[in-house]
Length: 327
Image (tube, rainbow, N blue to C red):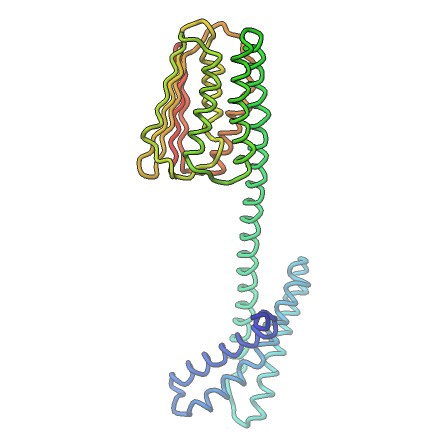
């Protein structure tokens, strides 16, 4: 296989294939009465000048046309066609038979010259498109990894603030929150660098985080979760849901006021539906960074382009998020 990758080898194979195709076409036409050997010889005489025309045309394009020396290029191109015609007439004269007229040869070799340059442009376009797609994929992967990395400190910053506040009031509950936080951070460290995880792992993360938040809340907060109708074997990009849940607890709960957070996740076939509803707490001073949500929106655009729908609504009483993903 390495031998076939050598340029002169596969070029020789291509020219050989072209020769046999020309010979076959000639034999199947009106010339077939001359026999296949004669058709093969006529095709060989015709194609021998084509090879230098093709390679010289590609050279002229690179050294003159691509450098915008158009006048010189057209002079050189005309000279290349003339060389091809003279070479054909010389070889044909050795055979002792009159072949194509000169005008026909000029037309044929101009055609081959245009075909050669056109194929190179086509090849270059395909290669450039492939390189662009590869660059976009690498850029998206780099950006995605950076977005995942930004989730960890953002999440940790908010949770540690909660633990700090609870620990002043109830040291035992603060210790329990630290244990739950360790489970959540273990997930971050283990799965944040992988492309896909089972939905069961994401649900486990959500349960750990919700339990962590419930430890700081009182019975005045109605927290409801429903993950029963989810196919936990489906694969999903990690850490997609946690920013929405974190945002709901951060902005929609209060230690003493009545509030609610309702979270549901279900799947129908390969379609996933995730909803979060939370109350609106007025006159509460909360630092808004929007880092987590902005990153998640960008990740959704990168991982599920045109395969997701994110709807965020808000009024005076409620904030809601509805996310649909085609897995």
